[in-house]
Image 1: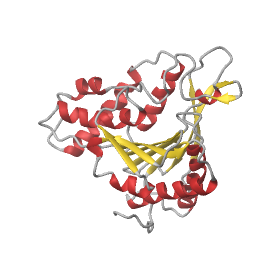
Image 2: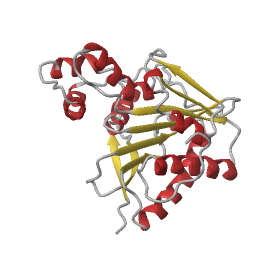
Image 3: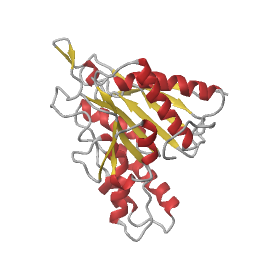
Image 4: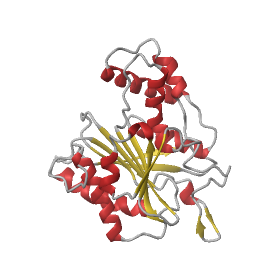
Length: 283
């Protein structure tokens, strides 16, 4: 039986008479042990991710119809309705918030210390138990953190959707670039199959890259907690990556279909979608 659902999450109104929302597509019946979160358009002027999502939805629809989806998969095809409305002289800006000039992919929430305080006397000697404990603490802490403006409210909503995922992919592009990937150093080399499947010609690693981009807000908490509690096993439970889909002008159905298929094959190889996966040069 198909499991696909579409829903909207209302964002707080920034001024009287306005309303924005995030549209979500979910696959899975809610009982799956693993979760995948993929978003596009956090930088609202970056078109390749939108088109990749279009093709990925088609692939996942087919998988869902055949009962092949074996994870909770959440897609946010347009992750930044705030930036998508920021036009200037017939040009969509969407990278920096016009309210405070903050990059939409910077200054995401850092809740490591709040979570550490909550779990410090509860950690066990079992990694799986600690993973469950930390995710529960994250879900309890996030609602207590306030957001001061519209973009901060958006960032809070996106993190709330993604932070319990095992895999997080944030689709971007550069101005002129080859396909490349950003991720945390502790995730490597376990995540090298992602870069290989995407055909990334470079993977840039950092333990802390600076100013807390979205992927690090999701993944960094795990290795920072592990460093705080060295006597307890805490896994890197979230493979989060920023995927740069070439340059801003590299938009075509051919490229987008290829990228969507590669993401699908990566998820299939990881056991999140049933079926025989495609060739990967290192897998």
